[in-house]
Length: 384
Image 1 (cartoon, rainbow, N blue to C red):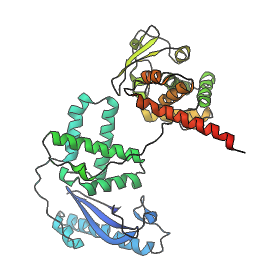
Image 2 (cartoon, rainbow, N blue to C red; image 1 turned 90 degrees about the vertical axis):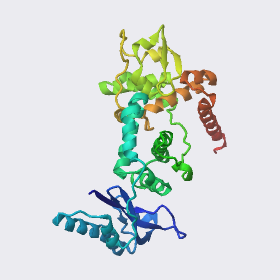
Image 3 (cartoon, rainbow, N blue to C red; image 1 turned 90 degrees about the horizontal axis):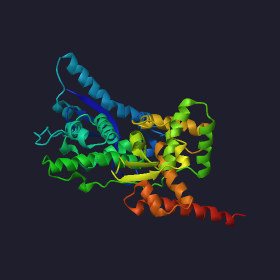
Image 4 (cartoon, one colour; image 1 turned 30 degrees about the vertical axis):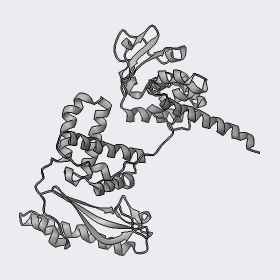
């Protein structure tokens, strides 16, 4: 027997803008929602402590009512434990005076087990190391939210509740939420292809994504980092800034920096197949690029690049030391390369080839950034 519980806000918003507070129990393989009868507005809901905030005039009374739900359940579990007995689903029905359908014999598999098995078999063969690690992190996160999840439990209500959990409890960015829900959709589609299910669950649920502008360094900030690289005596800062500036001057992604070898350099050109798209690119090694190459070797990986989180932590320290106000990360380097190239009047098709974009439309995103910057600068004429 395995029982976990928590409080969640019902995704459906009432006419007055309030939301019902639900007591959610995961009983073995079943998810059970119990309406507490209490409504609140999102601004009054404490997502960390799972209670109504003190600023609400009736917070104390309503929180006492809410705590009666887990208190009842804990007393029942304690009583059964003392008597060497287990809690049955009928006990929950009687405890909360609700209708609970008894578990049906499922023809489909456990979704989490299905995903984990796929990751360990096909995933290890076809996914890049970065993607494989991401898939493992996302199934682990889903498992923490719902330890046992069957395909027929994944419906619109479940997806909305999981989305709400990611947004309000974990404070994820909309595009991060999009990625985590898209991950579920990926394996739902695979399960359809494998003949495990025949219903497309995401037909009634639309994934949401927010368009964001690429973050990049201004040329002045880039020069600050170059200056800091030349002057710093901190060996770790120099090491991490070296591959970052190499990326700023070549446009290579973080995943490519981890894999680039000395064998990929021939006659002052870099020849590499990009990890993300498998597109081949060739980049000339200019004097600026050459400054950030380590001492040449006959073979082997060029840069000892750590995991993304570690790299970004060092880059944050470096930005502060170099007096760069922007919070930089590994991917900022590639965007910086693109915008500086365009600012230096390197043509769009050339930038497209250097970045390895299959479509010039992708590269045009950076051109639009440059255009908006020009407009912003020219607007200074209107300032008195």
